[in-house]
Image (cartoon, rainbow, N blue to C red; front, side):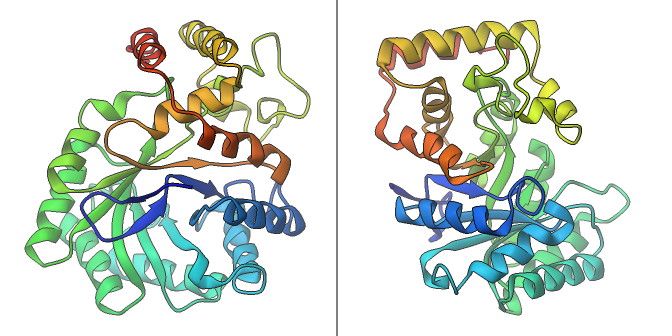
Length: 305
């Protein structure tokens, strides 16, 4: 699998990342182990997790698999801290993640969101402290607007701790990052880790005629998550993706993933799966590079997405 630098940093990651949002809920420890082995076996390195996934269970499962199943040196660990603000609480949450992961340090720490009640300098201080203490090699932010990203990046650069990564949703159904986030990231040398490249599953075409019983759309926990992209406008984009896939002799999943993966500024596309068999579908996109005319057609049909 192709490896890319994250922004202008020295951090190198696989252009597909393994997301762990379902671990500890829809994906048990045995399936997680199979996913991890499949992903690393295909050349993948970047593992994306967060403190809220499975209420911490995703990190705990990952901590049991590394290094027992996969050597620590074979993966790049990225941890996002969600739902916490303030220097002390952020660092305490990071320490809790490290304990669940069974490691003293991660490769990338991202802080999610923006708390207007907390000075941005304080959030930056927590990120800098993580690097200074050796807890994290690189730092980034998640779920922020362009100006928020730029504010944090500008301040961190003045204290010698560049912000190297930003994480946001990006797909043919969600292109708002192109308005301000990607331009700000480019100016400050940060690379995008894009999540939900399959439009929360909608771009696979599985919801064209209904809701499969075994899909996230049928799950009480994820129904609203998927419904966000089940619109008339999205349906037109899905049909274009299906048409492109038919013409290329591949799957809609591969087309959607390849489109986002190769957009300017993207360091890695974060893909998730319930099991190893489902993950193989995303990994198949590694063999696909979209022809220019198909990419242009998908750009046009999704321009308002």
